[in-house]
Length: 299
Image 1 (cartoon, rainbow, N blue to C red):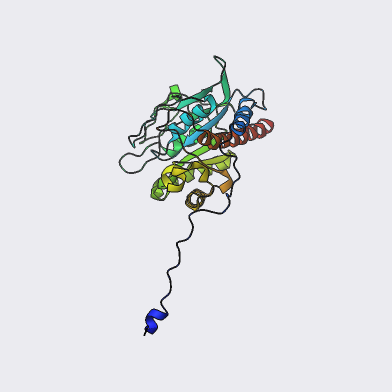
Image 2: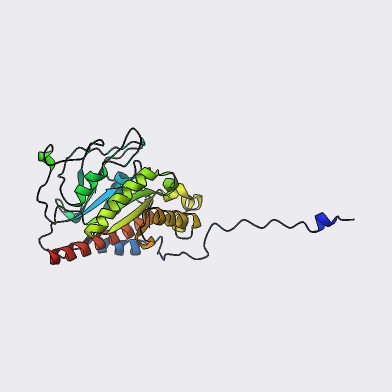
């Protein structure tokens, strides 16, 4: 006779699903026409203020987040081929030591898009401190010139770094959008010291009215479903959890967070990687253009 204990033994519940039934952001995948329309929109993008020569987009983030790889990936998506716009490394150490401006080539020789990315040294803690948060704040205000070598111990001053200190920056010199590159696979491991640095810079950008965006890189390393099929990025519960964690830790709303997969081993373009990258850059340059227009009319 079956015991009462075995009779009342419950069948284990199935594990919760890893995917949403429907994507929570609509994307048209695997469609060359859709990608071409997005690319054409970026190619036709124009500045609204005549005396602004280019939109300046600053990338910050922890060491190894993929800032330089994101620059290269945007270049790949725009040009349709493997490019080397920014030197990148997989060593885990900050490969960018100087304040560097990256332009993006158009199809015609000598022709460039009306926006640039500024790459900086990564943020770190411990014995290797990475970029000083005061330097990033001075970049936001346009005080640091191209080529300045970052010093983790002390920030730039107009007295000791006269060659690279811009005393009277114009709107052209200032940052028009702040983009924090955060790795999806290790957002939980980023130290509180680095988070505080990011928040310090973010707070200053807020005070200056500068729009802020998070690019969440390495989504393929954060979720096995997405690793197998990038079109599942907005079906994945894991990716949405990581985006929510980014939002909670840095205070950036979800609609300003863009998950992407950077090019790091591919040598030919992938349509779905390009679609995510183009979605990100389209909104970034729109936000920057809006900011510049607002600033120009209040100067």
